[in-house]
Image 1 (cartoon, rainbow, N blue to C red):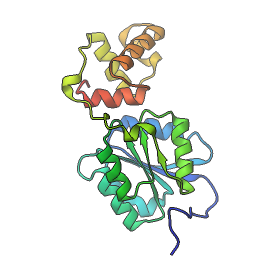
Image 2: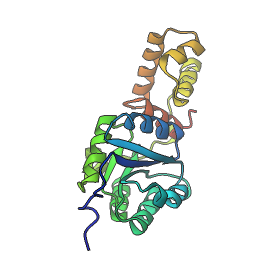
Image 3: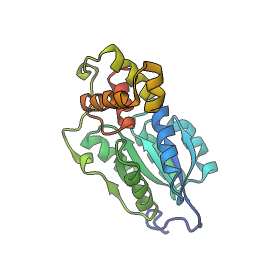
Length: 218
């Protein structure tokens, strides 16, 4: 029997991608950015593993981006079941922060690689292409033993305006849209978001929203 990790589907056309993440902002933002690449097509997004597993045969995805830490069926269990029921589907794990144990569990379940949610969308697109051809993708930080989840006790004290801006960022608003709501210039909003990213150790808006949720700041 052919190894499905080595033989991608032969259909011509864009690589069909499914995103599974319980964070709506992550799902919608990543889907919008990746769908802009002509060789990628986001066929669907799901907020939990049970929905994704039920629909995987109907979607016929080539690659699935799976959040590791989801309530109910987590990414490890979803990956294991997908690989059992639809072995031609490649799985890439998505996470904000993780541990060696989590990386090992996802790889044992059948994931081809590991991506951090703060990766640039071009890097994610390249990882999808690599996984489609059967290549493993493992970001350098994935093996960092110091990578541990953030705790609510780690949350910085935010001013009222920073807290409001952070919540608007998590809702997916642009700088111009936020500026209208907080009565600031877009440049000032951008400055505040930059400070928030430094405080929460986030490299982009997606990770900023994710870490704000982890720290119960939303």
